[in-house]
Length: 317
Length: 229
Image (tube, rainbow over all chains, first blue to last red; front, side, top):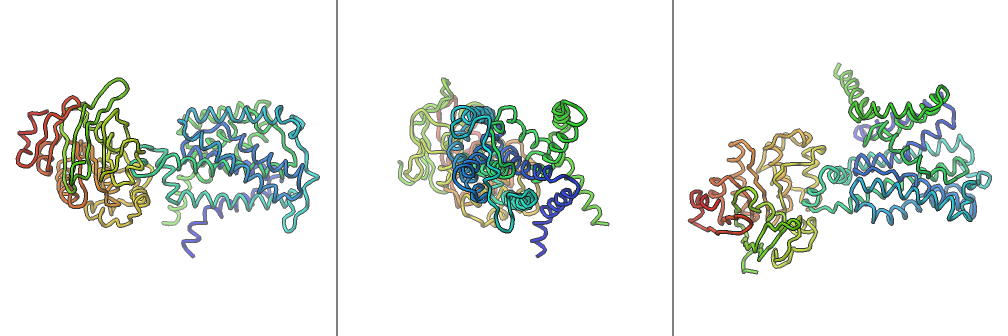
């Protein structure tokens, strides 16, 4: 029991605080934070554990979103089925794309993923306009059927669902971090030659990490689609490419709770600062420069050691 | 393949781009033998080990282990065959603990008997939860060797294991290598002549990419080896 609590206490505390935050924040804001955190988690794992920076995350987000959207617009009405289809689409695409992309060096990996995002944008906006409706997007909010227990067509029920999904995601990534696979990812990031000398294939490690990270991103896309009842090519435009990377760095690269902290900070600043100044992105830019110069640890990466010291010092007393 | 040899290198030629660094290298290692490669800096000793380990693809020649050709295999496949390479740089997975570093070695080989590691290097028992990046040079070398011996490898390729280490640790490694040869064959690249002459069964002297002499038995003496450097 003690070990169980010791393993879960961080996640329970983080999500309890998130639940408390819901009391003070508007529902749309809370939903945005949850989904954006999941979106960022994939990017954070890729960058922090596997060592790949990706500016193509919007492509994988759009994969999940549009797969869900196609189902709900053209074929069915069950949002749960739509989300599963979105996850499956993300998984398949990650396997196919990853088999080629993870062979590249980190800098080329970043660029080729950015190119993928651009390709997706034009595919969705122009080439497949017959089925995507281009810039007009796909509207399917009224198509989403009511579901038992948690009715995802209702925002407050959707919040509970997204909250539970996020908790499950965080538990999964915490488990991954504690497993040998997590150690293999980190080892491959630190020194890929030595990983080979131990008998591991860097390609397999990276591909598995890539698939996990981008399937998570596709899940976030599916959640966006169900929550908004609308998708458009805008979600994969190149000026959105840096969003998950910015939030990852803001929160703390490779940390478990960095994506949540980063999503709260980014969404909060976007919401608050935009009311005060027109160019809120300028503020974010300066903040990022400050973070990078101050040690690259991000908000949670800097706060976590201080909190641990505080908690353990109190325990000793 | 010469009979009785666990590792055979025949007419190996290696280059880095246009620059050829190894010329017709021939080398043989029998089970339980310690074979040393000596030579000046830049002679090609490390290149030889990297070529055997699959890190560098040779121009021509053959490398066989128990009759199985190694040329063209990926380095991780060669490692799985029981040929472990311990590089010169003493870089471990610094963000992982000692325990996690050993777990990586165990999982790849399915050998979770860490007693064989801590018997050779008792100090590692106290360092299990320390991040490997915080270890001293000697402790890192212990960890790298300890991690490599998991799975009872057939051949250990060790590149300059005593470089930069304190004399006490060098003495300890001398004892460890003496014990290791009972289970594995060792190919050691070293510049510490007294050490390798004390433990080696065979010494190859390499000069400008060529084996200039092979010494065995009574001829393996520091003053004999030195003339070939």
